[in-house]
Length: 216
Image 1 (cartoon, rainbow, N blue to C red):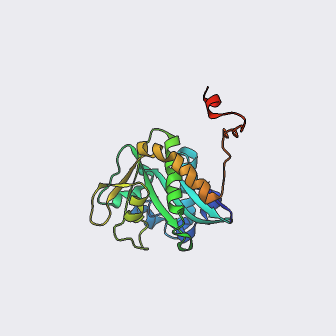
Image 2 (image 1 turned 90 degrees about the vertical axis):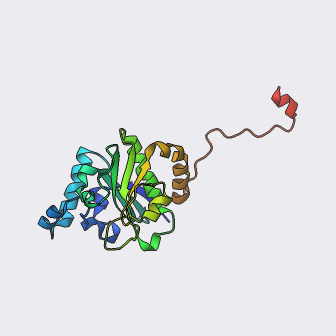
Image 3 (image 1 turned 135 degrees about the vertical axis):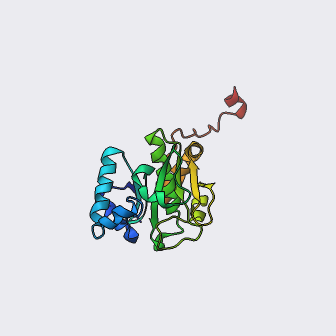
């Protein structure tokens, strides 16, 4: 089985599972969404194109045997005005906003969601000048709403930053993620089937040399 994580681009946008290529709940405010009804696919593609040109990477996609099976997308909150509708908005000034995320039901429970979150955190850290990732978690998840379950967010490193009975604001402090960069690499290699050779393999002991001679 071939598995890899790719950047979200116009080439793989149309293949996203769960109808996400036509979902603009995060990218546009309610008034704008009504104006573009029937043209969501084109408008989302234009949004991704603009972000890639003006800001940089705004998503990751997990691809299994050539087929995208899950993804996450994020951006500075000003470019995801759909987040303003939540009672616990706005996000903190030092954070980017994690918007939609989805993993095909047939591929859940295999660590792909965690891998996507860790890949996102690594990318945002490299971007520089960003202290955290925030989003709104759903305490009662629904397929009708493009909001990640709070339970999932808690499992992958987020904490409740502002409580709410339905959609608390969740935060992942990127300063703490530095400590699990090695964990990310290990998880990625395990999932993607990559094994790295040791950089400095230990020499085989010489049976003719005693331990005392080695220490001396």
